[in-house]
Length: 412
Image 1 (cartoon, rainbow, N blue to C red):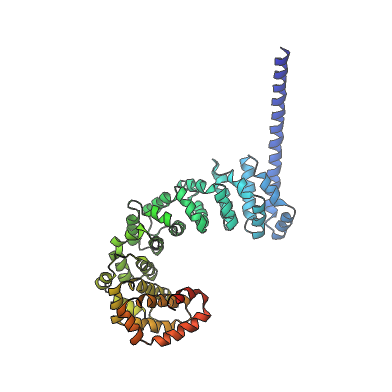
Image 2: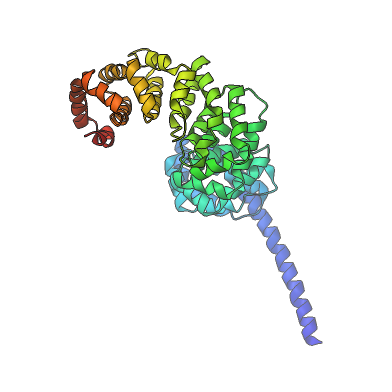
C-alpha cells in the first residue's frame, strides 16, 4: 500500500518537473530565437559577421540544430546558410560535423524547414569532402526520394548534380531509384528544352558504365534518342554520347540510329548538335559495323575533307572529325578509301597548321597509327606524302608536350 502511494507521488513529481522543464525549454527557445534573429540582422554588416564568427557563433548554431522547435530551426538553418557562402565558415562547419546534424532533419514534414535545409546542403555541396560525408551518412537515397516533390525537385537536382561530379559517387546512383526517376523527368518534360539542371545530372550519370546500362534497359535508349532528335537538344545528345563511349553491349544498341545521327551531321546548322552527333559516331568502335557503307551511303568523304581544311571549321568540330576518321580508319576498306580521297594529305596539312593544339595533334597521330596497319594506306603514307616533315614536327612536339606522349609512343 505504502509502495503504491509512493509510486503515485513520484509520478506526480515527475509530471510536475517535466511540465516545468517544458515551460523553461519553451522560454529558452523563445529567447534563443529572438537572440539569433537579432544577430542575423546585425550580420548584414560584414565586419560584424566576422566578429560573430570569431566569437564562436557557428558552434552555437550547429549545437542548436539538435533542438526540435521548427521556427527556431528555420532561423538557425537560415543563419547557417548565410554564413556558408564563405570557405572559412564551411571548413569550420565540416569540422563540427554539420552534415550529420542536418541529416537528422531530412526528411521532415515542415516544408519551409526542409527547403532551407536543402539550400544549405546545396551550398555545402560545393566542398568535395562534404559531398563524401553526405554519401557516407546515407543522404543520397533521401535526396532521390525528394525528386517526386515539386517544391524541392530543382534544389535536389542541383544537389545530385554536385554529388555526381565525383567519379566514385557516380556508381552509388545505381543503388537508388535516381536513374528511373530522372529518365521519367527527361521523357515527360513538356518544354522545347530539357531543364539544364536535369540534363546536367544525366550527362554526369551517363559517364558511368553501369548507369548507362540501366538507362538503355528496355526501350530507354530508343526513347531518349527520339526525344533528343525531336527537340534537337545538344545537351541531351551529349548524354547519349557519354552512353556510347562505354564498351560492351550498349554500343550495339546504336546501330539502328546511325542513319538518324548521319542526318544530323550532314543537315543540321547547329554546330553544337553536329559536334555531339560526330562524337557518338566516333565512339561506335563496333567490329561488325560496315564503316565503308556508312561513308559511301551518306557521302561523308567530301564532307570530312572540307572540314579538315585549315580554318574551315572551329577547332572543336575539327577535333571530332579527326576522331571519326580515326575510328573508321580501323577498317581496311575505309582506310583505302581515305587514302584515295586525299584525306591523308589534308591531315598532314592540318597537323602543320595545328602544331600547338595537343588534342588535335594527338588524334591525327592516332589516325596515322591506325593507317600504318593497312597495306594500302601504309604505301600512301610512306611514298606519296611528306611524312618526314611530319616526323620532325612530331619530334619537336614530343619534347614540348607531355600529354600526347602516350599516343606518340605507339608509333615509335
